[in-house]
Image 1 (tube, helix red, strand yellow):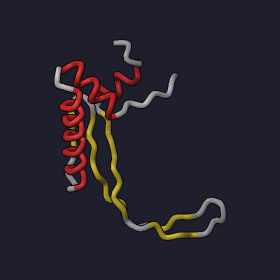
Image 2 (cartoon, rainbow, N blue to C red):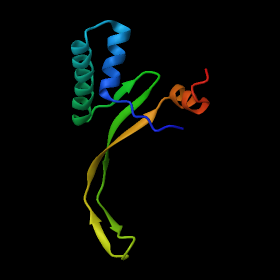
Image 3 (spheres, rainbow, N blue to C red):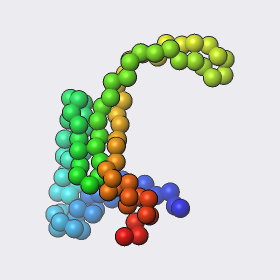
Length: 100
């Protein structure tokens, strides 16, 4: 299995090829979609993409953690974390290795 990363440039290139917008317009479209998604997440909204999955922000409460090396306890402050839950279609597609 190779370790390839899908980048913004790859997405804008795909939009350029599939939709027919110029390269600049494709890059701007990808940037606007990502900006809109991140703005919604910052405001605490869910981002649901049909047949792909759902991005959401979860509030984690404060807790006491432990340094695994020394065993010393340390407080972990409350924080917000980004979570992704893939759709069943995406799970199935990844499981089959895109054979379908």
